[in-house]
Length: 596
Image 1 (cartoon, rainbow, N blue to C red):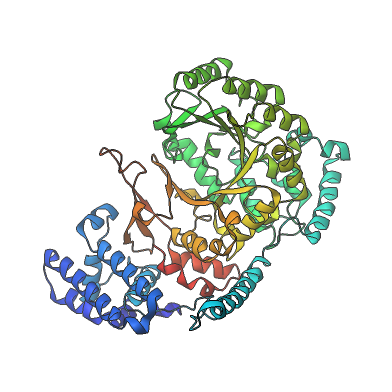
Image 2: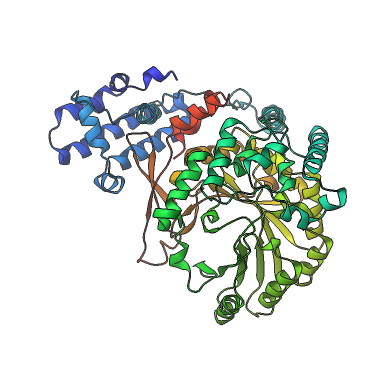
């Protein structure tokens, strides 16, 4: 769709009856129900030609009707602090609305087109999945041929995102490893020692430039982090996963650890002036004792070690970390004893998530002390360890560490599980497979949590990761939508794109490769499952094109005393424009407007 159509003049031509009513009705109390009536009439008119529009389009018509009806209600206006009713009346009467941006008109136009049964995109499956008039074996053979063609489309998309297990990638990384090793003066034996990687964490733009070429933007971001005292670190191993020159292959790898300058400045400002806003998940409100967070009945978080060898830009807790491998990161013995005693006093807690920071960066003896004491609590039946080391420093998973964890894994009595965090297929290497195999050899399950960011959100990019994860022995577990932090603007993706990815890309994978759940971590409320439409309402499209959602809490049918959360998304048009600047064809994402 050409941008010149995202204007008030063009919008007025697309729904003349709607704007006629908005122009002729004076009272807001009368206008809201009249506009909703017009919307329903438009729906009914489109559905009157049901045989022509088909089932899929009929469902989309009803979706758009439901969304527009909700936006035209007084409660939605109050929660979103924006009135679509007023905006429609102002536009109908020719009153200037400079606050309404092209992204607003774009989203509203697609809603009106969807309501009228006019779709402005081509489905990637339409050509290969046409309805059949056959039945029985003939129909099955025809459908099987269609599915072959559909998988061919998917395979073409997957090939755009190479993994670290392909022969070309392995050869490239072998050369990269030698370059990084020589630049840092490491022997082959030192390279295999995780402690050496911790000691030699890369902490500055100058050091990074010795290992790979930085773009001007990347260099400015790292320098800003260094100058502002923000923690920055990359393990030598992870630096070897970057290409010699920035490329489309390693873009997601770089984006995770090379912070934008605006991000560094905003994070530094909040740490100085507005620390409370950095606790996006409001963990302080769910921490009954130091080192413990508890948001759900049967699980709590234990954070004994508050640092990492590598800082992820989008981490929800990186603001709490003073420095990479900070010497004071280990919790004092008294606090740890008190936290463990608290867990023992609360037998409702059946599972403990050991996280931080990255707990596997502790030495084996300290880790054994903590895991052993948790295992000695009769009510604890699962210890889950959150760590990025299989991805950022896989040599940490030594045979000794795996065996130590395996001693506490007792099938039928207690489970030890590891949850790691891979973002892209290019991160999965033979070294990762070795680490995972050591854990699985002890009966320990390994799972993955992916954060869906701009840098891994292209068509079939996340699907390529899930596919290679399963082949590496890692189960896809969660796909997190990016949190709505101001400093994370460059990384955020509309909720609609994650929903689209789940339905149009992940859904094409075999079942075991698409077992993850798309979630949004709602501040103060916890994980919000995005598959279930009854868990949220779309309240408004703001003047800048951002959608506003009201998220319902998980316990809404359990207790009356609940709170909801109203969150502002990123404009879909802004996301598509950013994809175009990256070389993507936005038309390949055309159905994204119809995911709510």
